[in-house]
Length: 275
Length: 294
Image (cartoon, rainbow over all chains, first blue to last red):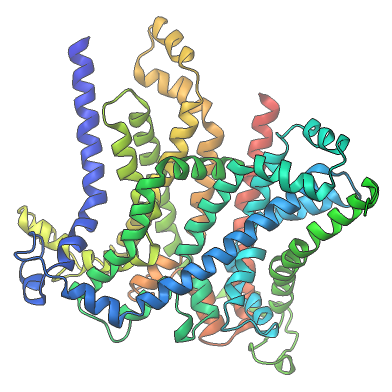
């Protein structure tokens, strides 16, 4: 019995190592490629670099608009995430705590909206953005990230239902205003939901390609996603420089992931199950 | 400044909901409604003077021109890839849910691709798949499988699979983590009872594990299907649709933004929207049915 168990465990490790190899192989090949000279890159693809040179990173950083892209992405991320947290928690408070005419209609319309894939409506959204004068401004992605993807509301709404109403009542006994109750009682208790929203929005917005691509073609408004795309596109850089560029983009997220593993795993899990 | 709770209530409801509702109407509902209207016109995207009602002409074009269905077939690769991805995710989740040393390390490794930048991943795989300098062909050569070398992105017989694999590589870990979460909620007692009754691991999987996480499996399959219908970023970045790798959504956006046929593009988008809606509806109905039986 014990031998059988050991054999099964061995098989499990074999499978897990194969899986890990498939994950690591592409990452390994860009990693070693990024430190090679052009000559070495094209002659010796898979080995470790004979000397570790950092020139490719310098070229990628300078020519690839990466500083600009990271700056723009960070700005859009911060505004959109803060906005999503405020909008999500405030509307969940209004919808989750009070019963009023039209409440179910509003909740229903959010649930339906969650099902409409926003990329399919871009053909029209494009003209809305243009009509509002948001084309080629930061306003376009921010408005779309706030208005079109509504997962934050469903997460907050689920969560607020589990906060006992007695807490609100107790605060009212002490004469606290509703706004104060929201700010000092409800919002702090929504903490885990906020963490989930922040993580999910961070991943989707950071990765998003078509919103900046469609609505901010201006060079000065490039995000990480559009900067790398144009870097690789027509005036294609060489593969060793591209490798360095890819690595520069990966490093911040990998670092963040390793530090915040637990939050990210639980955020992703609860986000999926509640949507 | 002591307002009654009744007044406060009205203020809170209106102020807290006004902005979110305006955004929702402006960027979700208005576009959806107008999309349907534009789909019956020949609008060219430039001013509304050139917009004429053309009835079902756009839909007729879509359903009679085999080109669109040929392209939709390319989405099928992503769907099949997605099924494999879901199965693999469940497989790894079950393995990592058992008592195994170092399982957290493997969970981190297998999940890692999901948090990496998607455009960068697509470009990374361009360097992996490159015919002469790609790391994949070099690896095959190095381990004596030189005969298996391929034009991964150039050969129409395999390039869609190569692209679907990138998608699998990206999302498998995400499905896996969700499955692990679901597996952890199954009570250990059930397995214990099954063991006492003499059930083997395979039987426990089919009789206990799978039924307990049925709704999560369904959810993942639905996400896979609607994701496959919307496949866009990976093929767009990696091939721009060359060598017959265009997907339905790529075609839709091209028709709109490259050829300025916004009317036809709207009709294509409506067709896509309908397909996704049907998928989601089926899932909702299945969930309800499952719920009433339980």
